[in-house]
Length: 155
Image (cartoon, rainbow, N blue to C red; front, side, top):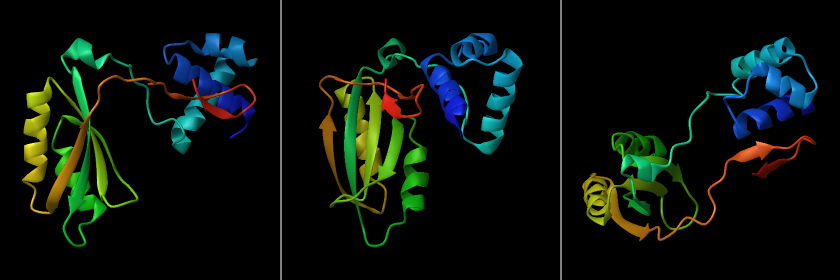
């Protein structure tokens, strides 16, 4: 991946609806050259898709929480992943260092809804306990962008 690829990715992260011509103008390539590079980046797995960023509150998801999972014995990450993937309220999940085995990011309609989700998670046979934190306000919420000089930063 060279500087032009990083610039193209940066342009797409900023606005995935940009045309190849607009991106080309920005990075100094023709529209067809940008399309070839985007196709190559998609085939290589560097670009995995195009999405719309949606304000969760507009969909009724006004409450969010982070839930730490503490699991029994040697619960595998894949077992945790399969269980939490069934819950539409879990928008991301990862294994982490420290005492907890995993960290879940939950979006819900209200605190009662968060409580219900945590109860469903806690009922999994491998979950020993949970520890949750409700988000009061989101201070920063930005995607990663690659700058023109090739460095990655938060936009």
